[in-house]
Amino acid sequence: MSQATISPATQTVHWHSAPAPASTQTATQPQRWSVDAIQALLDLPFMDLLFQAQSVHRQHWPVGEIELATLLSVKTGGCPENCGYCPQSAEFDTGVKAEKLMSVEEVTRAAKAAQDAGATRFCMGAAWRAPKDRDIEKMNELIGAVKGLGLQTCATLGMLQPHQAQSLREAGLDYYNHNLDTAPEYYQDVVSTRQYQDRLDTLAAVRGAGISVCCGGIIGMGEEVVHRAGLMAQLANMEPYPESVPINSLVPVPGTPLADSEPVDPLDFVRVIAVARITMPKARVRLSAGRQQLGEAVQTLCFMAGANSIFYGDKLLVTGNPDVEADVQLLRKLGLRGLQTQAAA
Ligand code: SAM
Ligand code: DTB
Ligand code: SF4
Image (cartoon, rainbow, N blue to C red; front, side, top):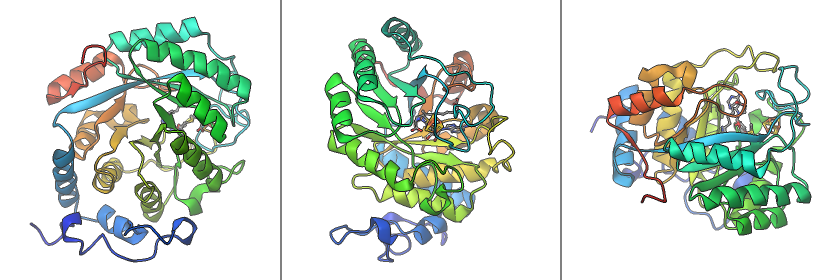
């Protein structure tokens, strides 16, 4: 093993007792990932980092299996929040029009098509700051219909109260996506209409309702490496850490405040995927938005680094994604395969 390889098993380099951010530390918590330890991982020689991530991946996951998750924007645009990356905020002139919630029939048709194309998870996104109870009732119908097809269900609807999370769970929701996006200290540079703590409160409501947590962030918003480490520390120190961790590369959308962000070095994006795999070995790490701009070679490195899920389908929420045929070809070229559908498994 090279000098630079950091192994969790040795507990010498990155598991240590350095204090975690005071805002999230409790007396009963076991040893946690410090921001410094994660930054040390991000700073490893690239090959050492990738080797370590791939080794962790093989200890915890079948080799070559990739989850295919399809997204659908069931309620697009007109959002009152001002997330600096988002084309759906009503504050920015991005050309995205506000639409009504889609019908059960439309959503069922889209979910069936995704399933026929090989997806096993279907994620419904709504551009709400926080849904009203009557929105939750309508979402429950959509969730029931998608679940009825035998797909895993996921939703991302903004901030939730505990009783709303409970209601979604009872309707059959498997996962709730709610991203922390970046480190706490960089958050207000990205969005000012809510606080980091609001995100944590919703995540607690989701966890409390027994829904699996899907939580990750975005790379390429002008953040420093320490902020990437801060985000990963927040995720990895959750108890338990999220079952799904989407890592997005910023899709710069004209009209949003972050449209002119300095593009991230693709290899630095791969590093974050590797660190997600090492610090959250059993999480499904999703290579999420931004695949169109990454190209095949960098995506391959992401799989090497431990990514085992992608968004699959021609569209994310409102921006583009590699088309299904291109993804099928890429997986075939790499000898990777999608998970079996639940109905077939
Ligand atoms: N309104 C809900 C919320 O904010 O939680 C759900 C939808 S929101 C679009 C879901 C996530 O998509 C965001 O938290 C962010 O991480 C990601 N996202 C949005 N726009 C993006 C962009 N332009 N590039 C990369 N990721 C983006
Ligand atoms: C996540 O982490 N990324 C997805 C999903 N969760 C909801 C959304 C990506 C959105 C990219 C820009 C757009 O199309 O709106
Ligand atoms: Fe609204 Fe979500 Fe977009 Fe923020 S990310 S503006 S909350 S839809």
